[in-house]
Length: 226
Image 1 (spheres, rainbow, N blue to C red):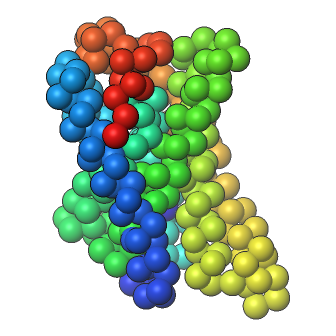
Image 2 (cartoon, rainbow, N blue to C red):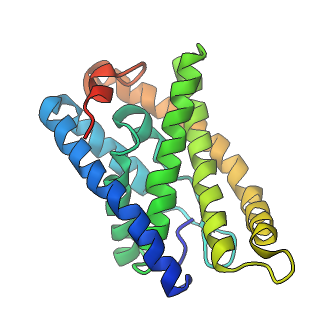
Image 3 (cartoon, rainbow, N blue to C red):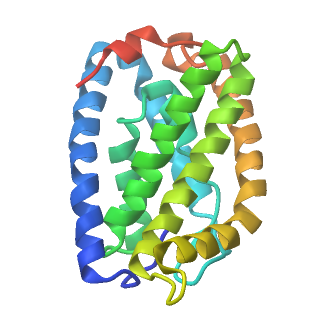
């Protein structure tokens, strides 16, 4: 994740930027509506952004042109909804590219699609399914954050595979190689992120941010759709 500057072919970089842009627009609309109708969640938006920035700024060497780290977007996805995380992740990635040399401007769209669209979407869906199946709140958050992390890296592996197919195995062969290398570091990181996110969400809930919606369903927030 955080594919480095200039690593993707121009066509791929532009394509992922075009794919990510609508989610940023919809996410900005959602954030605007949510914060207008429920101003008590404004601190939660800040917490979600700060958490995503802090943990995704960590870097462990991984596949050439990328790195491994927690993602941090599961927290915002299960409390604010997946769309809200697209502009939040976009701001995080832009700042990291400009000031930390982490990621890049030409790969911003690809990184955003993985970190701000696919990961939060998977985390939100996993959380909803887990809660629907009767899993306790902490367990559902753990599952959501862990699967959101793995989904982010699954998409990054697919992006790299599409850009650099294996000479013998094609895109499928390349995907297997990229995903296999990522898995060495990402599986334990995903489990750790799941546990830490559940712990953080409970701690933040005790502070009263988000009007107490953090540890259970948040129907008021879910109704605030673009």
